[in-house]
Image 1 (cartoon, rainbow, N blue to C red):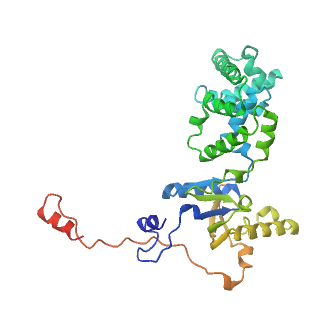
Image 2 (image 1 turned 90 degrees about the vertical axis):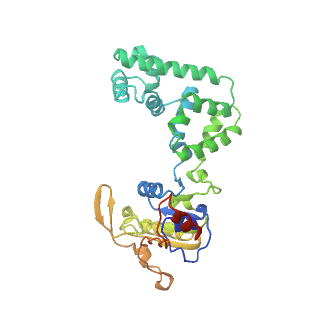
Image 3 (image 1 turned 60 degrees about the horizontal axis):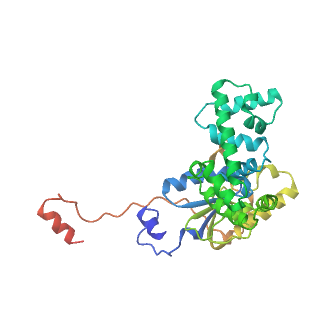
Length: 335
């Protein structure tokens, strides 16, 4: 990371640097609403990162869809599972199809999955009925394919059959979650009830890969029990830390303070607390003031600094010459 910092102008090339890997760094935040701007900033900078949430494994992007496909195969899916399958299958084929389908199911008093397996009963126009018939065949082919298969094979077949690997190929959380899901499936044989129980207990922290050469972005809640060499706690502003909902409630404020302490103690070597004077929050530009929890930290323990200014890269000390002139080769030889 030191070479990256020099090349990008983030630090002075003459400054003494300590080599670290991207995996040594973590950025912690209070609420998941803060993560998207961080994602955008890291992508723009070309810095590799992994996002770890505090949701359960089955709620992770892509994994929720995979679990719904598995449940449909076992004929134990609910309306939400059916909605996810329709969204996967009808994407780009018919704008607004899911909304029309749900409305028709409510009108007739039928479950969504029942209408997927009996498309003629939905009473939809020919084009929409054809989509339902394709989905019905999709489901039936999958159910035939998984008969007598272990759960490990079913996870593999569902991922391929329903096109999940392509649909979520840009989602790193899906790739990590899929590894966890496969591992759980291997220990369950064909017992899908046990499988569902184990998956339900898997937390977002189980998606954290400590071997990844990536900066970790995660909520303060999800960071419990983990440690990093360098930690940034971002959004240290009143209303985020402590969270606005805790205002006036002594018990909740105490919980918020404990959570802040958890975040501080994730750092083994260096800790940075950042705040801004104003930010876009829920669609509005709002003024912010520093968190009272930060103000409560003893002054002797804090060093206050302004955000870094990008360093201008030093001049090379020579003028680039024409590629085909004699002088150009002489210029290169002096370096």
